[in-house]
Amino acid sequence: MSENAKPVKELTYNEAFDELSTILKTMQSDQCDIDRLASLTRRATELIAECRARLTATDEELRTILNEFEN
Image (cartoon, rainbow, N blue to C red):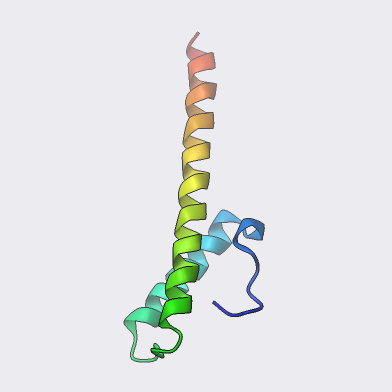
């Protein structure tokens, strides 16, 4: 969001999700400055990609654990 925002990889999943929610609220409000729209969109895209990657990795890990449990 800002130049001093934490790198996405350093955020917890919940921090990334919360920041994404904040960005969405900002973009939907009358307070969204058109000059910040591109940077907000860029940051949101990075957050979405990171959250998706973590969810996919967790899903794969859980499938592996459950598969081992069933065998």
